[in-house]
Length: 399
Ligand code: SF4
Image (cartoon, rainbow, N blue to C red; front, side, top):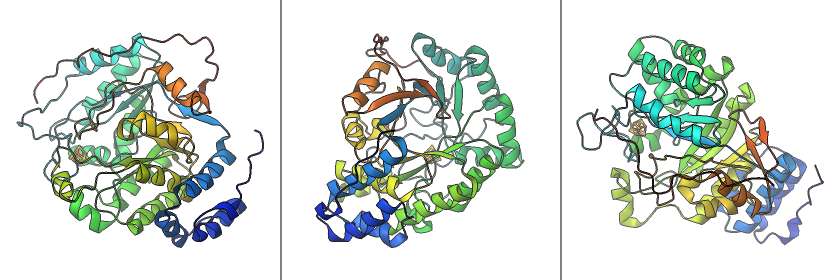
């Protein structure tokens, strides 16, 4: 890997950023006070310069992406009334509620045969009646139909919910899912760990410590996971720093996190957004880039930082590649969770579009699998695969 140019700290506009920059250049761990400086600075380009340096030291000019397909088997959720930031969930008899039969899930997943796909990303609501066997049968059926596919499935919140329904430990749930073919867990459900924030946005969800507990259990079973933070609602900079510190602490202990994904809150069609809209607090590109950069600098023990283009747009994701980010969310195909919350991006980014997005940012695209093993690095003979533009979503059954 070519040597990375050392940033000239005297060029940083914000003097407070210079002392943090010195730590970054020395490879020293940042403290909470440093995190406060990073969140407080208005020198966004200076912050980006430091984060880009930290990323390039680790990843060079490589940017990873995955050819994946999202599957959301149900939007029925028992926490529908208390996760005030969520636009995806429905009560069982509410308009728009759906629960897929396994055959419907398999039919939607068959689209993967028409394009390069390596991973199914499966998340949904906490359905009051779906048992663990629904998910193990789903994973087993998907593996039979697509043997080479990695399965990244079920957030910590869904794992804990299934353990409650089955009256068993979360370790038992994880082991059964792994036996069925599970590769890894996504990082959703973390939101912001602060008790005060959760009391406002996710009162009955797992506590921060419980979320950490599920991921600790997964790591002990050698199931790798991702981690996230939902920013841009009622949290403070201190809440964000506490959240990142908890992620970093678990990573020191287990080393089981693959990537960190800052997730931008979308205010449409949810109760929290109705309140926040009065004072206009949806996230901005400035905040989105800042959260990518701070994540890269603070989480010195997590290998990758991913930008989730369905939330922040492919255009901003491309800029994020020079603000500390080395990983772009994949082809996706059907994205429902953030589109229900007002995201106006396409649902699907074609494979060749992702390659071009990365190349046009001056970076080197690397297709990876769920475990960050390299799948493909040469794209000169790439022919655009079919897109789903204009194709309707599959029919779903009411819950
Ligand atoms: S955020 Fe998750 S747990 Fe909460 S209501 Fe939405 S789907 Fe359910």
